[in-house]
Amino acid sequence: MSSLLESLAFQRRDSLLHRLDPRVKLAYAIIMIAIAAVFCVDPVSLRWEWRYALPYIVLFALQAPLAVLGKVGRLWLRTLRASLPLALLIVGTNLLVTWFYGRLDIYELERIVGMAFFFLTLVASFSIFTLTTSPDDLSLALEQMGVPYWFCFIFRAALRFTPLMAREARITMDAQRARGLELDKGGPIARAKRYVPILVPLIVNAVRRAWDMAEAMESRAWGAARKRTSLYVLRLEGRDYLALCIMVFALIMAIYIRMFFGVPYLLPYIASILGGLL
Amino acid sequence: MPIVLEDVWYTYPNGVDALRGVSLTIREGDFVVIMGPNGAGKTTLVKTFNGLIKHTRGQVLVDGTDTRQATVAELARKVGLVFQNPDHQLFCETVEDEIAFALRNFGFPEDEIRERVDWALRTFGLEEYRDVSPLALSGGEKKRVAIASVLVWEPKYLVLDEPTLGQDHAQKEVLRELISAILKKASVVMVTHDIEFVVDFRPRPRVVLMAGGRVIADGRAEDVLTDPALLKQACLLRPQVPEVLSNLRDLGFEIRTNVLDLLEARDLILSLAGVRR
Image 1 (cartoon, rainbow over the protein chains, first blue to last red):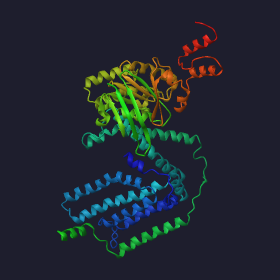
Image 2 (image 1 turned 180 degrees about the horizontal axis):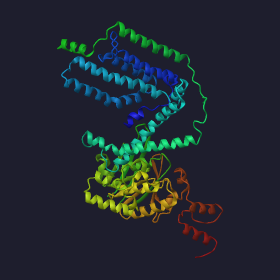
Image 3 (image 1 turned 90 degrees about the horizontal axis):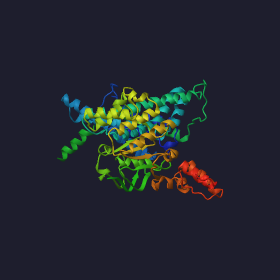
Image 4 (image 1 turned 60 degrees about the vertical axis):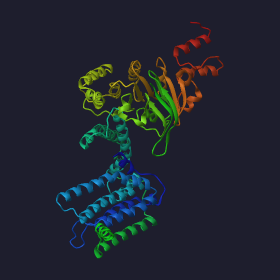
């Protein structure tokens, strides 16, 4: 859990992605979800349906060069590794349910793999966004998009405290292990129970820190000024407009492909090739 | 059998070398204080004692057991580690349960747990808080609960990480008495920045100075904590007694400066003035 929290944290580096306007990067994450969603909607009936795996696998694979471009490749992989258990959970539960109803075939398998890759695409695009955007920039972007300041502040504080929480989780785990707690022993329920000694101090400290922070902020007149001005004002530059154009073009292309071209099934195709070979 | 570290190295996943060839022996009955600047590797070092950190190179033996071959739970029976901030570990509904937590993890029988918890509550002056939530206690009381919750299984080696942090003078004195009492039963290793707390101990501890992941000095407190060059390297201020003696020496008086004891210093100064006691 702590590695997932840590890997979402911003890393200050110099790259093209770091220099992009935070609003453009937020738009990127949202447009990636939109493109993924386009392939979940039937173009005729406009109903939401899970059917294919290929579009999500392609979308997912397209994120890797971007992570490298943003110089966050290793951290990005760590995020994915940390989210892998959830992806496997999606696969596992779906397999179980379809098998239970006796509907498990290669098309169902394709649907399930597609769902897992849809999830991984969401994680991949949002982690590129969070890994290359400082919480301050993000908050500034939201503010200048008209989001109320108090909300931006909460958002920024939550992001900023994420690595701290991860660090505290690690210390607490060490402290309880030093008192003989064995986290990896026993079945799943026994293991879950063993996390109580970790979660209680973590939550209590988080609440305590929130109170301390509220007091410290109030004593520095937080919220006294009705209308806030910003020291830094975000302005879109040439590269931002270019990136936006590419993203909008990609979305239009995705809609076009979905409406006028069929999406091929991947797993049945592989199965047929394998069948032919055998 | 002692804790023996031989040429121990540890590199964090982010590439930082926290320990660079540390060799150290902690024998039964020892009282060792580990001092040094922030980031010197003190906490990392003590975490190798109970296997929370598995060293990357070298060897750590606890009573002959290689810490890389044993679980933390197995090593914790011998090496009790009390963390800096009690808020990172207190979670039970009552102080009694908090102290019994480790005993239950180690599988002690219930009647022995009761006996040991009663003993710990008495020893640490916590009897009146038996049914109180540990989260509702003051900073000093929480610290005592944290130490009691470790000492209760009577580890052979007790390691205290920054025990005086955020404690007032009275609490520090309580702590000093506790540590002195513990020393009769176990070896104590204490990580601290609090130099005056260290020099007021009788008998004085052995001092290990660390800087940059290495041990830069290991010896008697009188020798290590009065050496200005070593103290500068370890970012420590010289204790007040040798500081005064050193000032006198700078003024041209022939006087020893490797003295930590206030009364001994007083006698030295009086003898300078020709007064014999």
